[in-house]
Image (tube, rainbow, N blue to C red; front, side, top):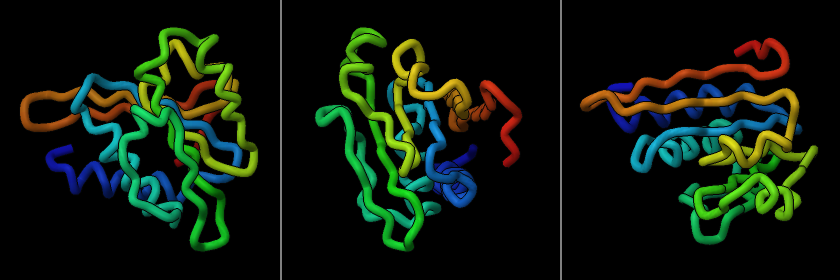
Length: 138
């Protein structure tokens, strides 16, 4: 991705394809663009915003404005283990659940999920989207 707007657009495209029960785990260092991607996901889903980093509140639910699934946007950065994440009880079959910093913490949410790795590369971002547990058409 060459710009923040390109990252938001990727999120919009992804958000239009997600359905209730989908789980997305986002990985990448600080400033990689996870929350920027999530802004686009929220726009694609048509949920109430603004979409901001939930680092300090851990999780935020954004209700749908268009009759689709809600978005549960979580950030596991401040959590030290999968056990702490499980204690949050974020399973939401009626919503799309997206977790920033989800690696090694949030995998128990779903055996089938999307994992998105974002790696800064100079002024651009390398984004890899991988389906885990089954093939996920995009």
